[in-house]
Image (cartoon, rainbow, N blue to C red; front, side):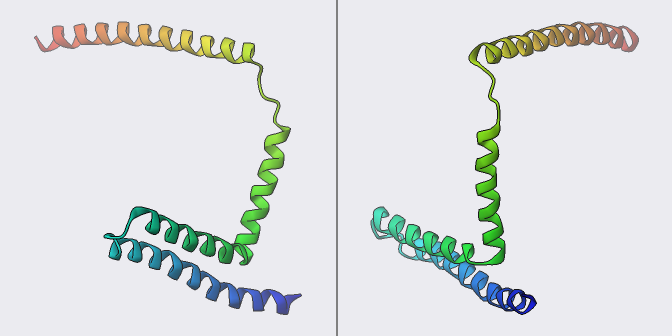
Amino acid sequence: MNIKAETSSRFDVIKWIVVISLVAAGVIGNAYYSELLLIYRVLALLVAGVAALFIAAQTAQGAAFWTLLQESVVEVRRVVWPSVQETHQTTLIVLAVVIIMMIIMWILDTILGWGASSILG
């Protein structure tokens, strides 16, 4: 098991170099072939991007990230979302608090401005 981890990490470095090379080639190629039609450049970038994502997913970090994404989808399904009525009520409460704080800050600003102008002349 330890030998497999060492081997995969050694190949992971090579895979990441290939991924970085594909991304760099896509960026440089897009700039170099700017006279070609946009659709060709987009297709080439999509192919390079999919290849880079596929290779990155084969690394240990990529596999861990893919597992994280799958677990996130499961967690989002477990969330109890508020109803429309709860959402509207919470929104109205937040708006009321914001308006009240706005009025308090306006009054405080007016009083402090008046005090500063009376001190400074």
